[in-house]
Image 1 (tube, rainbow, N blue to C red):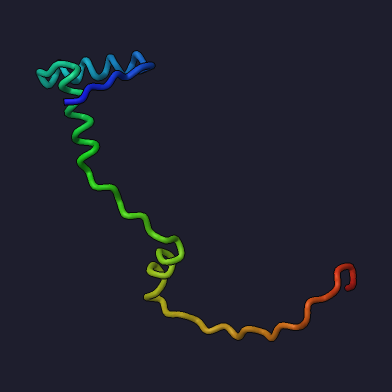
Image 2 (image 1 turned 30 degrees about the vertical axis):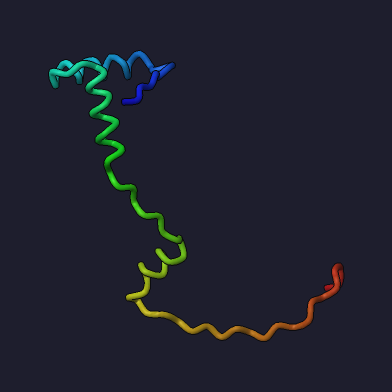
Length: 80
C-alpha cells in the first residue's frame, strides 16, 4: 500500500474530517481513505462538443435553410 502526506490542509477541513471520522467510528486516516475511494470511484461525465450539444437540444424544432448571398471580390483596404 502506498502512503501520502497532505500539507497545508486548512484547520477547518481537518476539524471536519476528525468530527466525521468520530461520527462514523473511524480513525481520521480511515475516513480520509474512504472519502478518497468514494470520490475516485465515480465515473466522470463524458465531455461533449458544444456544437453537438446545441444541435441535439434544438434538433426537434426542425432546421432552417438560409440563402447564402454570393460573395464578391475582397475590397482594397481603406476604400469604401
